[in-house]
Image 1: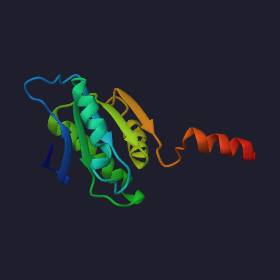
Image 2: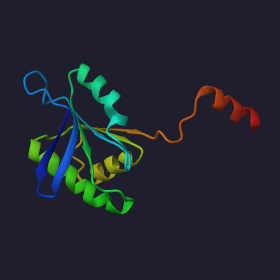
Image 3: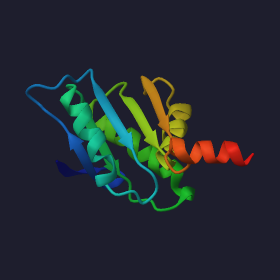
Length: 135
């Protein structure tokens, strides 16, 4: 599902899965997508984590520029404080991985684990073998 929360930094749209009745507050995963990424790009991951009993949040930052990294970190800490989440797992994909690293540097005790993924450079096995052969 999706919703909007009003934070001191402004409104924030959030996608994800939050089960008040059955989910564990100790199993929170925050998904950070790339710049200008669409929520649908994380939906498969949201669904898979929800099936495993995780509470999943995917904030959609208003920023569209790398220059706004510090503002994104402030929005994220504001969200975690607002929800009372102490140490979620933070997954960052593409530019979201940079956001996750910056968050961990600024707030080292506020993230349990970082999971970082870079999707734009992924190639399949066939392309990999063709590149190796060309070298």
